[in-house]
Image 1: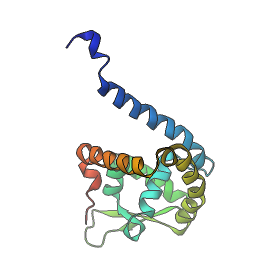
Image 2 (image 1 turned 120 degrees about the horizontal axis):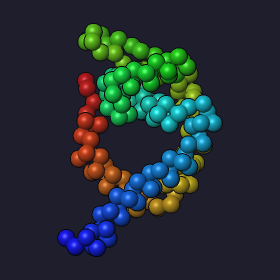
Image 3 (image 1 turned 180 degrees about the horizontal axis):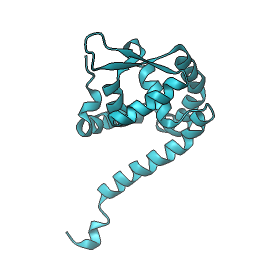
Image 4 (image 1 turned 135 degrees about the horizontal axis):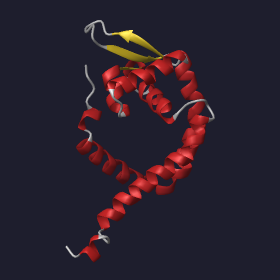
Length: 157
């Protein structure tokens, strides 16, 4: 390919826009979790737990869903546990495994963050697209996520 045209490749535009949109969106949403004493990673983990059956996930599943190593998720859960937002629960069927479980205090903190967070999500993301475009984008993102991170959709039973 001619080097002059290489830099005009529309694939570079598409992936570049994705990076820029991601960074811009996080910058807009950040105030909602920071003003409630959380990091983005804290909120991500608490939201994943709050939306999971029984409000709990195996530590290994939480690691995958948050894109953390096992030691990284251990440090995250340690911090959330110190703040009273999560507790650990042994897996009765597998002594090597444990669950991170959302506590009442964790659910209360998420409920406190969500109104402002969702308002910002609507202002800077979903509300900019309209229902049809949002549905198409969500479907497209799911395809990309499933292809690039299939482990993120597999929950251990």
